[in-house]
Length: 210
Image (cartoon, rainbow, N blue to C red):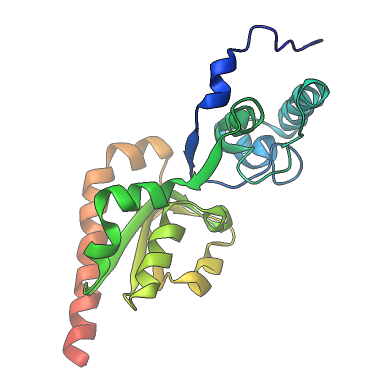
C-alpha cells in the first residue's frame, strides 16, 4: 500500500450513524493487537504475526495521513482483524460490546433475574475473555442479580482463572482427556451432554446440602 485517497468516499456517510457490536476491545497493533492476540489462534507463527502487525501498522500510518484522527490504539480497533479500525477511522463508528447488544435483544437480564444458575460457554476460555467476550458480559449481568455462573468451554486457556473475580464461579472444558480438535468437534454433542450432566449432578448435591 503506497497511498490512500478519499476522493470517491461518499459524503452521505457523514450523515449516517454506524453502531458496531464487537466482542473484543483490543487495539489494532502491538502486543495486545489483532495480529499478536488472534493471529496464533488462526495458525500464524511468530514470524507471520510480526509481518501481519507491521502491515496493519503500515496501513494505519497511511490512514493517519488523510484522516483527522488516528484511532489505531482505541479499544475495538483490533476487532475482526482490523475491521474495527476501518469502521472507526472511515465511518466514525461507535462501538458497543456485542454481548450487550445481544443481551438486550434476547432479554437476558430479565431471564437471569430470579434464576438459580446461569450456564454460558465459549470456544476458548482464557484471559482474553476479560476483554469483553460473551462469558464476561453474561457473568456481569448475572453478578448484578447474585446468580452463580458456570462456563463450559471447548478448552481452558492461560489465565482463565482471572474470570473468577468477575462473576464466574466455575469453568469446565468439554473434553475429559487428551483429544484432537477434530475429535472434540465431531463429538461435541456427546461431550456437552456429559459435562451438563456432571454440572447438574453437582448442583443437585449442593442443593440437597443446603
